[in-house]
Amino acid sequence: MRLVDELAAHRMLYVRALPTLPDILLIDIPPRFAAPTLPMGRYYPIILESPTELLEMEAFLHAERPTAIPPNLFDRRSSALLTEDIIFARYAPPGPAWPWLLLCCWPAAYRSLVPSESDQFAREIYTIELFATLADLEATEMLLLETLGTQQVLQIKYLADNEGNA
Image (tube, rainbow, N blue to C red):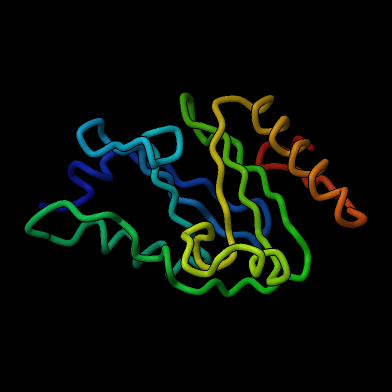
């Protein structure tokens, strides 16, 4: 069995808007493998920090296996990104019926507030949330900004997305 034939047959690459951000491969998990613990009950996001990692993931998905396994090749791999700032990055749907993504990069000061045994951070630095609409994403961003704003002064800079929208 190859993961690409069933588990990861329906997937989409969300391309980074800036060179320092990762690409995100989003797998739409078939109903028989889906679970309520997945974002929106059916998606599996994979953070890819380099073209080499994309090739590595594709080889992983195409490899013959005796049974389906989670495509968690990079989940616990350390990130190459180093930041002292909180970064919010919006990823627009690259095709119809795909969700919006909000990738957050958290500096060590914030990550240290979460118990180390939890699986809150992918690659030790990222969180990802998925949304059906841009309005839903914006509402969550505002809630996060309001919460963070009570703790420190925030400097917000909006960057253009892949379609050139701010």
